[in-house]
Amino acid sequence: MENEKEIILDVGAGYGENLIRRAGKNPDQRFLVVEPDPRNLPKGALPANLSWIIGKAGEGNPLPFKENAIDEVNLDFVLVSVYGEQEEENFPQVAEGILKEAFRVLKPEGKVF
Image (cartoon, one colour):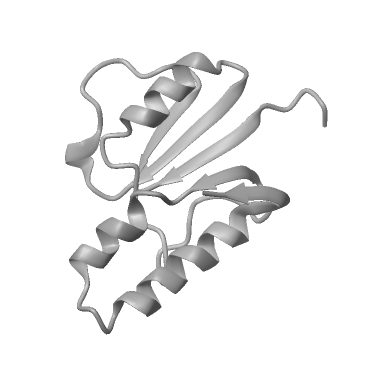
């Protein structure tokens, strides 16, 4: 539908400064954050078009969205963060689980960053 807002998802955004700034400048888009650490939830007010969800993504942790629902998925911080938390031999499986979930929720014409 033409009037639907574009949906941008950031998985593991940390404190989400970049996404908060982007949401404030783009009220015509909807922004979602899935972040596992509740300590990273910003203390101040969030833009009305930004939702913050405490949770994980990956194998055994499905993202709380339907298939083909998201226009853009940002993974820029999550893979680096996960690499630092995992034993080196576990990283490929964990990264694969995150990527599978990202592509599951991504629209066919969507973008991953």
